[in-house]
Amino acid sequence: MATIVVHVMPKPEILDPQGKAVGSALPRLGFEGVAQVRQGRRFELTVDGEATDEVLAKVREAAETLLSNPVIEDVVEVAVLDEATA
Image (cartoon, rainbow, N blue to C red; front, top):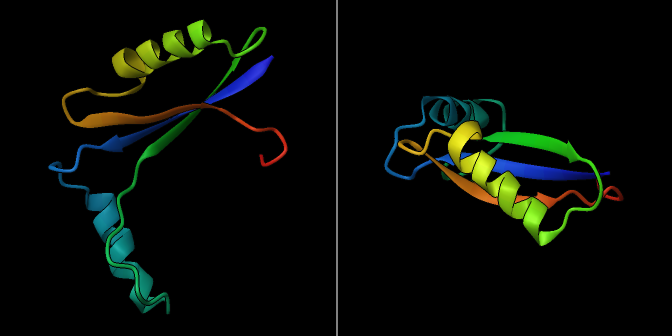
């Protein structure tokens, strides 16, 4: 079994009120120097067998059609999770 991570982010031209709220809160909490925050979503999919190129392509297709809203979001990463860093 392998775990595949999908990261989805709002398109750059889309307003991100959650990211803006976090960005505004950071300096008030003492975290200076952050110019911008964009908030996205992370999905972890565990698949049977190995994460072959074919499996990754199917996961990317699922990410682009089901896990994201293609009108306002981009799938920015589909990658195999390295269990050593999880």
